[in-house]
Amino acid sequence: MGRTGMDRRTVLRHAGAWALAGGVLSLAARLDWARAEVTEEAQANAPDFTADTVKRIAADLAARPFSKPEAELPEPFNKLSAEQYRDIRFRPEQAIWRDQHLDYEIQLFPLGYLYDVPVDIWLVEEGVPRKLKADGTLFTIGPQIPNAPQEAPFGFSGFRVHGPINRADVMDEYVVFQGATYFRAVGRDQRYGLSARGLAINTAKPPGEEFPIFRSFWIEKPAPGAPEIVVHALLDSPSTTGAYRFVIRPGPFTVMDIDATLYPRNEMPHVGLAPLTSMFLHGAAHRRVRNDYRSAVHDSEGLAILNGNGERIWRPLTNPKLLQVSAFVDKNPKGFGLVQRDRSFESYEDLDAHYERRPTAWVEPKGDWGEGYVELIEIPTDEEIHDNIVAYWKPAKGIAPGKPHEFSYRLHWGDSIPVAWAGARVRKTRRGSVGRKGEVVLFVLDFDGPALKEPELPVAQVSASAGTISNVVVRRHLEIEGIRCSFELDPGSADLIELRVVLKRSERVISESWLYRWTS
Image (cartoon, rainbow, N blue to C red; front, side):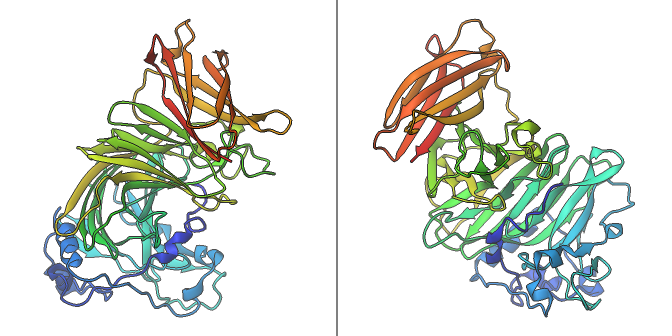
């Protein structure tokens, strides 16, 4: 399903393992919640797992200071290379629920390399939780780790879900939870690309970003024929704890219904809800990286927003020279996401990465999220192995301790934005230059969509926060059954310019609002 995430999310080094002090939680005590093996007696006396179990654990945990977890592994497991880590493999024949005639199987990830956070994983069947134990019956160790003892210090760092998402007779992987609070998914016939996270705290803010972790997971066993699988997760960090519930439905679009309750330890003035993380190296809209045989390299090419007023915004991503932060102010947003819109192999020409098959992730808030803004962060990078794009919803007011904070949303993973649109969308953004010295910037925007079927050409309204706009041209583009709009920008002495384009017919907006930040 594409390359693994372990060489791309270097921020995961900040995540740690966990161990709770004795007596912190009644449920923890009864189930021997520390890292020791669960006894048969403790298992028999375990309370039933309910929808509120993780909430109670998170609330109790929030009343105590955050204790940075640690995992003590002997050599060579404490300093595995990427190649060595890949050589610790889960035994497919040991997949959870294999041969039980379910449409779901669980495979587990070991500790090691960047993934040094031991995670407790529980299976829940008919309300009864059972803790999984990591040992040599689940993993094999290959020749990249010479003289490795068979009684290796195994632990779990996450898990993945398999099912017949592409073919009825093949159990393909389509969801991964591993590292901090990162998780990824794909729809049918897709490859992994961007990631989601449980929470973002102080992203691109001093004194530095805080990376919460998922300390424990509870996976409910689905009934035969069930269209969905339910996963619960316990979040922890210096600033907050949290109880998360994921209802995951695989298909052409893999859909997650996510309910979260935060229990803040401290004031959180800058917190990002429903964060998405992706990669943009270069493309037609911004080509800072040179000498690449591929015309585009990105997991996502644009940020799309459907705001509370019904305006549709398309913001092409860039790979700037300096870190850029953009805020799109809104109230009760209807949706936002990082989008891979171009599905043509010829746009990427990469036989290994197949960027044309990377998913779009669309966040659909449930209920009123109030005032705030979608924040987009673009980080300079010279390599495609690093994620450099972050987007999330930032509430206008910070989240204060003393009471729970609840929010819910639906997260779609698929080929496109799952919202019908009768207007015109931006199909492609291209950027070039005019003049001998290239001091004038040329923008070429292609639009398609139902609103452009009428014979009358729309009018392009182009505005800029600085510089001079000239030579605005709108004409038919028969190859895409749409139109092409081009214009020139003379930046003058400006270092940063915000651009905006909309198409109008009879003074009525018929297109997405194209927004772009030009920087020198």
